[in-house]
Length: 127
Image (cartoon, rainbow, N blue to C red; front, side):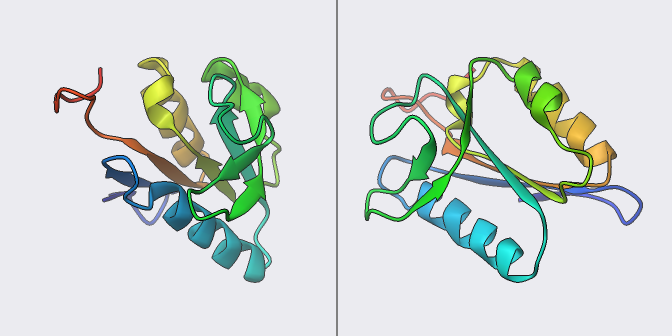
């Protein structure tokens, strides 16, 4: 799903169940942006420390460096002006303020790529 217009940035959301390749797809998109010489910043929630505290890691072992944050607003504080692409993994671990943060980043003209679970263990939407 992509949200955006020509005069702003845009938002890409990668969702699905566990083990569906969300983090792998996020890493793939990040690497493509880096190959295109775009400045990328990657964020993840500090609570996600399964594999690494400072990397997004997929189940197949692919990884990419990331900045751990405890709340969504920290992303805005750490965002560098010349960043073109912002990637956020495990979005289900953030509170609802992430929606406003992501919109604000897109309104700055940046591409935002988010990945996370869309449903909990009961099959109900997060949130």
